[in-house]
Length: 353
Image 1 (cartoon, helix red, strand yellow):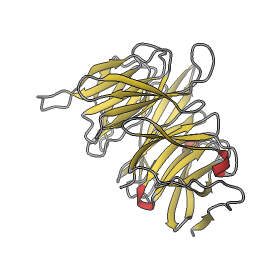
Image 2 (cartoon, helix red, strand yellow):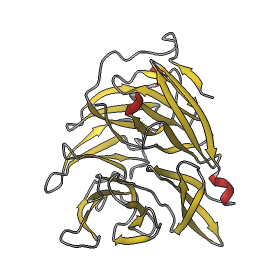
Image 3 (cartoon, helix red, strand yellow):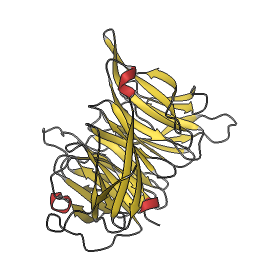
Image 4 (cartoon, one colour):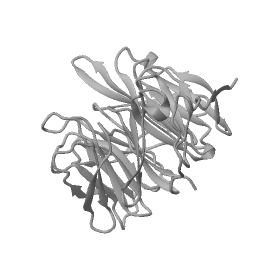
């Protein structure tokens, strides 16, 4: 049965009074209870959401766009909840309680559900939602991924119409740690398969491609895995620290953030090699970001601009506060750095129409 959450009283929250453009970028700033909205392609700050709008301090980690219900959901690790905002003006609509340890999340293809990783409880919350005016209705159940392994924790998640893929990172085997990629049936939530890879993996799932993308940070490579057979089709080597990932719909252009670098070789571009019958990929671009650890990436392919968050401490020990912009039309080039908030983490391109 669905439960209902309502917009909090304006006595405890502050309303946001103006509309947003049809397309913008959402940046959750993990360490100062703020969310920054940036314009695209210019990257200007157009709105800042803070604790006064939500009614409490929060720890925003990642965001998901749910245009079916004209909402954006943000994972709040501190309070174990999903925060919901109207995608046209970012009015706060309310929260849904979750398991402990909110991190990565992903909407179902029909946008009726959100799959939210909870790494403390070692589960994935499956949150079915609906919207009635300014109220969100929901019900929940769980995928108990932690029951499969005595150690490790779930971390990243993506889904298509058939499958849900989840990373289980840091599973201890003897003196070593490995990651497992878990493949579930999206409708029955039955475990279908699993694959062991090196430590610290992430996921990408292009809509018009047969491949699941799996960057391996420790091994410094990007794997193309057939979603149906769950076999590695090809691997791109020479992408050290590959962590945050973004892609276009057919996987012909992929961007990877090097989370181990604070200088040269910070963001890579991988493209499908042209003129071949079989799929191949090659590294073609490198971006230097100068004393700023690249973490997560999104790309506005229509306007040919890339946004990169810088998370964690820089070389002087202070937390990063910036998002960098690059033109990716033709020869890629640095555009500018934008002040976002303390420890910007995830990044999301939102299209409302």
